[in-house]
Image 1 (cartoon, helix red, strand yellow):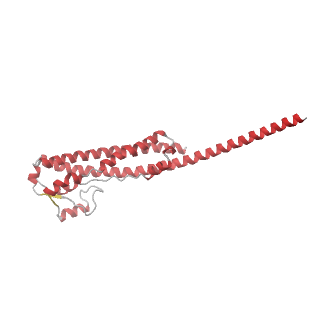
Image 2 (cartoon, one colour):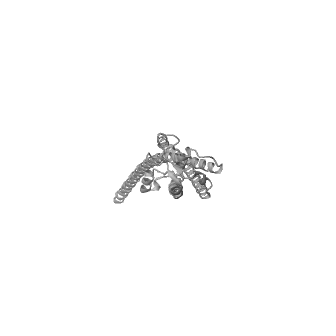
Length: 249
């Protein structure tokens, strides 16, 4: 009799233990499920913010490409006048000013900094994670380094000796009102151009030709680097877009 009671009690106790264990496992499962949902929501928000930052950065990169292309065109026009021994024209005054200008890359990286603080492992797609780190640590870093090249340092030592600052009010007004001014390149108050002291001697000066060639090569390098950066941004945006669509399903 006592053995039967003991057996029933043991079965009851074991059943209770099993129920408790099952309850704990279910609670853990629910907790894990909630945690996964929370992490997915955070990941989605971070990827969305990152995409927005990349789009804004790309606008600045494309604007810089446009500006540098126009700066390059002015420099090439000056070089053409020298190579073809063309006569001086007032428009060259602005070209001499434009050739010294440069852009500065202003990337938006607040979402990436937030992502680093939270931990990159929040990104579940390993390919996207790698592309993000490669872009910000390598590709964007290279573009930033390229943008620091100073065309003032390339040209100014020579300009200070062989040029006067342009004081033609008509040309200055034309410059400030639009004309051929590259978009976003100059703030009002910057010098619009330079006038060579001796244009004939300038055309035959090999030193100036070398400076021009170096500036042209540097400008082409910047445009190439920025173009590559823009393509990398487009690629990363497309990857993020695809991932966001998958996460919404």
